[in-house]
Each structure stands twice: as C-alpha cells, then as structure tokens.
Image (cartoon, rainbow, N blue to C red; front, side, top):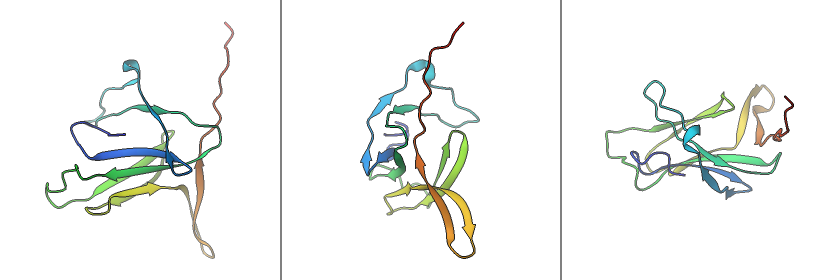
Amino acid sequence: MAIFDTVPGLEVTVLVAGVPLAEYNAPAKDITSPARGCCVSTTYIECRDDAVFWVKVTAGEDYAWDYKSHALQAKLFLDGNHVDNMLLGRGEGSVTFYEVSCGRSPDRGYLGREMRFSAMKIGMSRH
C-alpha cells in the first residue's frame, strides 16, 4: 500500500506466509485527522485468526532520496504499543518487522516472538 500520494515511493505491506494481504480502503468516517502535524493513512486487511504476519516497509525507486542525505526511520506500533524501529537507507530497498522484541538473555541473546493476528470478538449486544 502506498502511504501518501504526497510522498511517492513509500509503501507498507502486511504479509502472511510471505504473501501480501489484500487491502481495503477505509470508509471516510474511519479516517482520522492529522495529529501534531503527522499524516494519517488507514487501510484495512483481513486474515485468519492466529496467523503469523510480518510488516514490510519499502522505499521504492519513486522515493525522493535526492533530498539531502538522509535515512528513514520506520516505527511499528501494534494496538497502540511500540514494537520496534528500523532505519532504512538509500539502496536498501526495504526493512521487514518479523517479531516483537521481548528483551535480551545473557545466554541466548536477542529474544523475540512472532506477531500473530488475534481472534476477533464479534457478538450481538443486548440493550
């Protein structure tokens, strides 16, 4: 999914088993206004409960790397919780978030766990 028309070349993709998921545009009522000068982009995906997923951030050939010498910092939040951040530099193409960091262990090094879709809770409410 392209993030913003004003910044061509940046894309975010959610993958399951290495395959990008189909994306659906958000209804206008679900698109929030920018906060603190940030742009907001909302797109929906669907997947089976408990499926392991990855999030891929790509700076394609259309991205304007010529503007100053810079790198991009991709920050991933799930359900409002910070997962991780990665730097994406010119010529790298993309970075992929595979797991949630769980800290470090003296004997095993970096610890992480897979990201999985939670089961949706759908029900009828009584009034």
